[in-house]
Length: 382
Image 1 (cartoon, one colour):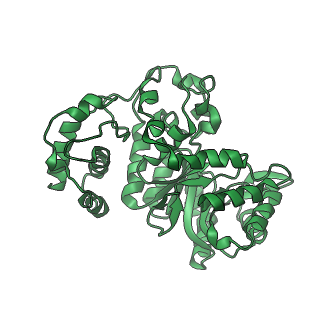
Image 2 (tube, rainbow, N blue to C red):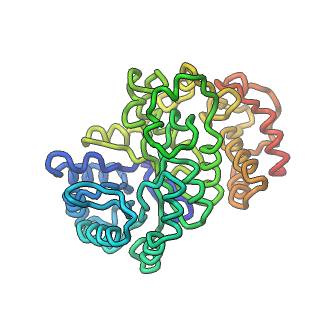
């Protein structure tokens, strides 16, 4: 298992994390099996969005004796009322739900306290200007919440949260189909087949801006819906009309700026192992470029997808990384110090490009790579 820094939190998280979908199965007995497998596989990060007290209690039981082996991302504002889940901004319900959660998990702190499911600007304003954010910050000052996060499916709302400086972690839905769709407050529209019937060109600019803002500001992204609820793995269900593999979906998410971990939903130990097998998958299995290029009605022409099809470079340039740093600098209108430092650490730099165009001949998306290398040399000075 490989590990990445979660933004500026200082946390080292496994590239493959666990969603909580399977924890409640088989009378919650599956929770212990999944945590046993996760520990064996080196998975140290998991998300717990559900407020079901039985599942929370099963997770708390599974964590006994190994709390220090796992990093918990659990949700504030996800409460259990009248026997069912509820998303709440009522501070009394939020407080009671949080206290119950901590008791059931049998822990005195969360590594990431995730403000739950904010997809509208009105809701964000209510959170940031009301008692919810005040409560979360109170818990952070007390050390009960180590780092503050927000979960969202709406890039417009997520960008507002990132730019506020109040969150350190963003839980966001990332996959090559959702990335085509514009911002919206109705999450169901991401699944609506009608939105994929017309010709779609390149990633939605607001989504791209969000990823770049997270990278520049040190906000780590934890990925949900990498498989689109499983739809992307089935050609009949995928809005793109083509099936991807789990490994391709994971690799796509992990090559987006600021992404640290993919929270793979697993209903069984076998499914969790299948996601963790990404770490041993050869480059040919990870490669998502060919399938993206084959999507009907969808074009990424001229847009770098960081797929590394341009490699190998005769001068050993890491073209995908150079392009990613270039895009981050262009998005900011300046060169953030962190971007400059990461660029400087590259073994080879854009100025070494000899303009042989071998990379462009291999690019499935017809990116002007040589031109990008010249721009990067000018911006970074080497």
